Image (cartoon, rainbow, N blue to C red; front, top):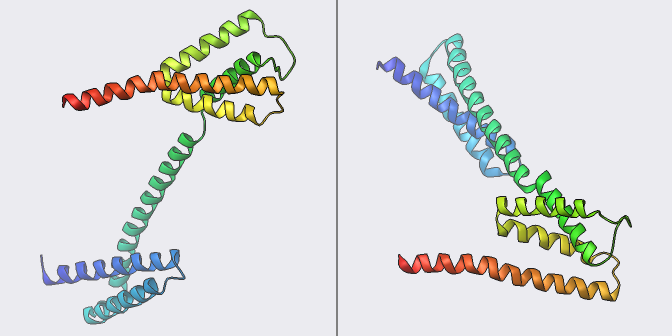
Length: 199
């Protein structure tokens, strides 16, 4: 590599450092440290430009190339951040399948409390279909997710206008759910503990 190429690389690197500092300053306008760093790097770059004695056109070519690389990197970072954000938001949002399960379980609990939201009797076929769909969901997603959704449903129903008898029945359903959790997740935890002991 020639001295000229070395100098061009130094110019390009210093301009890239300056652009990165300038962007940080724009994102954090109240941070005096970023402003000071940008000014220092800009000054270093300008000193290098003066030493180079390059014509304006050559400097412009170097700056354009560095700026394009910088912008491409920023765009890629932004695209990644947006994709990651979307992915996290989708995970936070309950899926259609989860909502269907919650609705089915809520209907099941309300039936056992004799509190029909629409005052319509569900046919035995509807009940059977609902139970099949719930069983399929439970098999697919595992008990931890099932417990979490059931807990949310029971908390929703607690806020409804219930009679003392219905509140008592709901309390029993909650106790049964906690017992079910101990049985299903307790076994899993014990198994994991046993595996760890074997190791």
